[in-house]
Structures are given as structure tokens and as C-alpha cells.
Length: 450
Image (cartoon, rainbow, N blue to C red; front, side, top):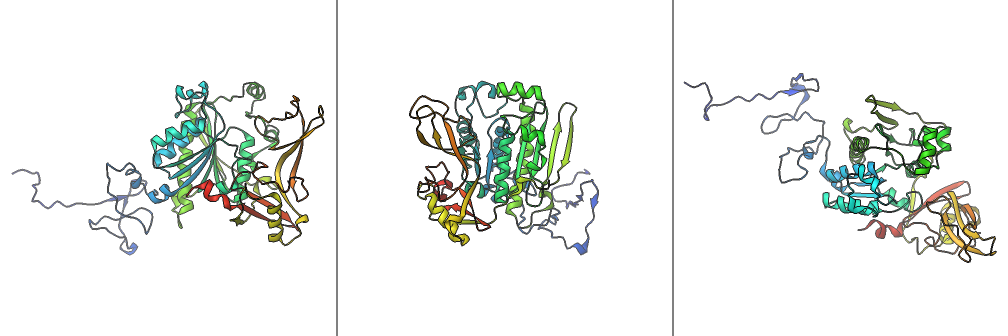
């Protein structure tokens, strides 16, 4: 007689649960574990919305649904912003596409050149000369057609309304300069948003998690040397290399470092997205705020650096609640109207209110050669700043600038858009020892879409 069981035999099925160390978990009747119809106990984290999964080969994201912390609805409805679309940005955006994140905004103002092809997974030789964000959007749309891709060829500090960032679930920076990181840090602090940052080198990479609300921010890590190099295009630690890089406007990086850090960056973004959307996120999704993960590739090692908040750090200025002004738009609202609304909300005279900008705002050029004055509305520190006089061929007219705007400006009755302010911008108005943040919410539908 065969020892093999026949179809009619009753085969006893024993279900054994193991912990992380491989030890058997013995059922405790007092724990009141819930069994399904097959007698299987769900030993993942307690979640009222858990459900029994069935793997469907026709479902692109079926494998993700088996992950304990993955909630499809949260990912599909998630809205993520990524500053930077270079080598590291390529990796991050590619991973977000594979995960099927619902809406991804990303910005970069560079064009693709031949050297980008050695380290950027989304770019091909036929793309040389085109804007990085436009090409990335095309390739990513093919990878994840259900994702809403919003490419922006813009400077995060001056050309994107703060209201855009305010509506994001996750903020990420993969830029290549200290100055851009400081700008992103200030934006996130003003809006009270935690954010992720990453950088790469030849064999090394770094991923950081920042939350200025009670913890350290990026600027808390900056020493005197970093402050001195803040406005350089790139800022390596080696002084001779910095001089050479300043001439080349390049910093050595590799696709290997970009791939590794881009993977970790996307994983932390996925965790942060769930944490922000879940009322009681599980312990597995706890964000390591104030930590930097550094990988050194020469003699491979991974180091976790714990940062501390620096007393008096300027990167912790939170603006508080935002007043949404639904009738205000960049094109339809003047500076005077904005100041008047601020005065009303603060309960002070309009002559006592001001809007600090935090940067040098050029409003006029004076030409010594032809003695003429001309309007020129732009931040002083932007790429390819044009200071040429429109009345003659003098290329170096003197800029006149301000760091705060008041009702006494001769351009006070000009629309905010004419002065270069983006749509859906948020302005901080000071007066009478108080301040309030006012948003041009009338731009929301146009900027964010339906």
C-alpha cells in the first residue's frame, strides 16, 4: 500500500508563525487573535482596515499590496514634490513612477548635455539640448501613465508659489548646491513641513530627514565654511577641487551612488506619505527625523549621524496658519491691495505694515551712461541675471533693490505678477508687532488643476 496520501485523505495543516528571529510564536488565548475562515492568524501590525489579499498577475501593483505598510489608496492619492531632475532626481522620479504615486511635481532649469547620459537613467542621446523636466515627464508618463506628472522649469526659491508646496504631502530635495538647499529648508520651515534631502559624490551618498518643528533642520548642520560657500554653484570640501569645479561648473558623481541613494530616498518618501495620511501609522513607518544616513563607498560602510538643533538657527521660522484669500490672484491683485488686506487682518494702519522678502528684490535699473531709469523686477541672485540698460548698450546698469515692500513704493499699484511674484504665492505681512501669512488662493484652480 502506498504511503502517499490520496485525494480522499484528510491532511492536517499546521500553521506556524515565526518572529523576526525565526522563533515560533505560540498563540496566547488571552491575546484574542482574530482568525480568518482558514484558521490563519494575522500577526502583522494591528490595522482595522486590513484585508485578505489575493495576488493578481494582471494587477500591476499586486506585489505592493502584500507589503504590510502599503496602502494603495494613500499612494494613488499622494502628492509629492521633488526639487531636482539630474542623476539623483532621475532615480527618485523613476522609483516614484514604479510605485505608482498619484501626483508628482518636479522642477529643474537645466538642459540635457552629453555628460548627463553617463549617469541619468531617463535620458537618451536624442534628448540632448532639451529641458530635463520635459524629457523626464515624457519618459515617466510612459512608465506610469496614471500618474499626474507636473514638470516645472523654475527656481524653487522665486518662481513657484508657496501655496504649491503647502499642498504637497511629501517634499524632497535632490539639488546640487548649498544655496538651493537653504532655500528649500526655509520654505519647508515656513510651512511647517518635514522634508527629505539627498546628495551624491563619486562613491558616497547621503540621505537626510529634516523636521524643523522641534528638531534640527538642514541649516543646523552648516558650519562657517559652508556658509562661505553657500552661493557657489557646487560646494565640495576640498578647496583646490572647489576652484577647479567653479571653472567647470561640474561636480564628480556616479550613477551607482545615485541609484543607491535614490532608492533610499524613495523608500523614505513612501513612509512619509503613509505617515502623513494615516491617523495611527505603525511603528515601521516612524520617520528618522534629524538623522543623516551616510554611505562611504571607498571602504564600504553605512553611518547614521544624529543631528541636534542649533540654538539661534535661522532655518526654523514657521509662519503659522495661512489666511486663504480666495479673491486674490497674482495677476489681479496689486501690492497695495495685499498690504491693505494685511493691515485689516492685523488691525493696524496700512502705513505700519510691510512684507519682508528675505532676499534682495531689484525693482529698477539706473544707467550711468545714458542717465535713464528703467523698471526691472527680479530677485538679485538668479541665474543669468540681465542688468543691461534697455535704452543703450550698457551691460552693467546699477540695480536698485529692496528687502521689504511697503505702501510707499512707487510701484505699489502694480499687479503682483508684473513684479515677478508667482501664482498661488504666500506673503508674510508684518505690522504692529504681529504677522500673518496671506495666500493668493484665487490662483489655486489654475495652478493645481481640478
